[in-house]
Image (cartoon, rainbow, N blue to C red; front, side, top):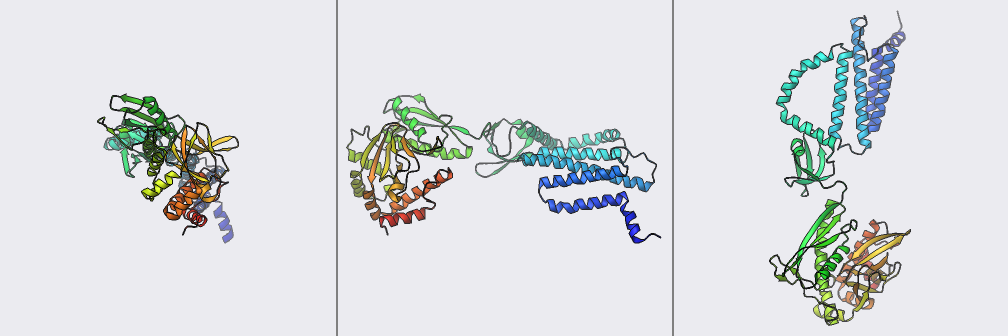
Length: 503
């Protein structure tokens, strides 16, 4: 009689036992791989190679029908081993498909196509098991199941229409996850998922729109995110013909030049679209970096149109053609008393809204007027300004030159202030402040500003918020390494209060 050790050794030599141990090891390796796609692929490769080696070692070719004259038990055992081998091969191919889509960084986008390929792989494995394990004619089985497939297809006609439409959309790729699309019924949203049945869109109001794939395949699709993420738009409005069209066009070009939200390339344009005795209709054409920036850009352009028309003495016109005066402004700086011009500038800036009428009049008398031609430098980089500057008209830019490359930090429009970091903190300017059109600037000396802030501490708070916002924007551009760390408006305000002796 054989000892227990000999019996155990003899048992280990059985192919079924060896395969059972191998399957157990694969199951134990599953928790180690977790959700890592590459780890699962490596485990499946090792498992399939080991399965193949064991089958060939025991002379059981998995890819050939079983025609041996072995006992029933042996045939059942070899059939189980072959079936496991085919399943292992299908698992390996499925892992390869999922790993490829994951490394391509589009796992959700390829979900439907991935499921289709994996389904075909497992269907092929099932047919191979029928042919090579059970030695049944696959052709006859497929022909027999054809009638059932026809009945099932008629019952699921609508669903299958969505499925095949989804396959066509995934193969043609008119859209991808993350794209903004618009359908012919004006449905618009960002694609968040595509599956067998439908495509899910997230609208601008954060509503989930589910569109059946069959409807999507028949609809005219406008892919707003293609061929790139930039998006074009237009803005129309009417101006009273109080000045020649060339002057109005120049003002509108300044509007586009002073915008920080629109792209500078391709170049934005301003064009007249209509004209009569009561109004001139003008259209601004521009592009933004992505659709989500469109609202911000349009809001900024409306504000800039108001500020530039006010600074140039232009007037908006109503739809009926009647002129609506937005804010009476000088037709020319030379034809209006200088004090009145300065006072109107202060009235239009919210920074000084807390001042009384008398205080604004007094401040206006202390302001100095500076003129700059196109290309003039109002302040050089790494210099500290000693006056608060207010841009009256024109467009200026703040730009930094690093390693021979010019990087624009900000553009300034009428009503914007600059020089606050030098006046308030003694800090240096981050870049050259240059006029890109003819510009008029008014300056408020530091001493006068200090007197005002002692009387109205709220102005110090607003300037602190402005300085903090600009510093954070510069840091986001990675161009503020040479600046003092001005991260929080509260800390900036505290330093300003300390420097100016505020309470």
